[in-house]
Image (cartoon, rainbow, N blue to C red):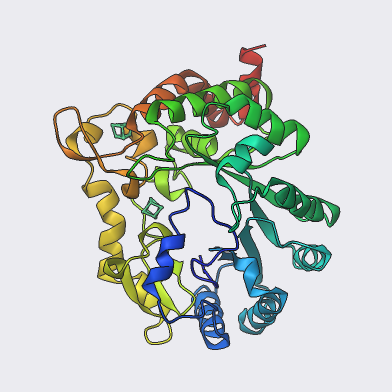
Length: 373
Ligand code: SF4
Ligand code: SF4
């Protein structure tokens, strides 16, 4: 993923760990230059000549702060660098606040996929998602979402689950599904070491379990929830498709505005800097020993408690950045959310096995819903 404004954002969400990353580049204007943009797209696209569809993902901070011209230029460069018959698609993760009709038209014309961050209903969302003047943002975000709907832009919802909204799974799920008519909802746990804003481990388990129970009765095949799809893939025995639930990781690198490439968006730290793409070609940085070791460590550094865990095949210790708890026998490196994941993956065992069996017999997993009706 590329971060054209680095960590710079127009909001000031209480739980955001990206904002402090500004300090890494004290002299910077935090705008990806034309040279870096060109180098990135050229290297990224031309390193995948046989891939029919290449996805370029813009993330932040807040990428819309770059203004539309930057993204127009990006689509022009992409057209220049792609091979005949290749398609380059764009995805952008945004807080939605700056979206207007011009954005709507552009995103529609270029068939961009937009992820918009909403933390639930107005009160829940506004608890932590505030602007720089500490004002609530919900109304602006919904205005942005309405722009996307008006221009029929494909939209996903990204909901971070924190101490503030973690006790309201059904209220949030129903709101997204029934009011916002969302068909794709990604839930991401907020985890910070001092726990001020973090969803609690049991709260996270209960949150997922409660929504799963609703989904598995009513919405399989209708509402796409990446955590549940990843679990199904792991129960089936294929790659989860999301790094956090794969055995190893290291394929989700983060490109800073100045061309610095980091191991992962959660590890934008000098220690995890691989190099700058204007000096070393990106494929070499991606294939470097340092990055391979980073990805492999997700598996190799699991504490014994995880290695013998009966839901390890589904959890894989989740993301290494969240592994700062101790196991019951005192070993370091247990995932802070372990208690929640253990309970969740055990809870979904029977319906998941049913769906796997349906898939193995070339039937739709959606028939699981009949089990409960
Ligand atoms: S460190 Fe976490 S977020 Fe980053 S690639 Fe690995 S699992 Fe994914
Ligand atoms: S549920 Fe807990 S013990 Fe099991 S793999 Fe996940 S983090 Fe490790």
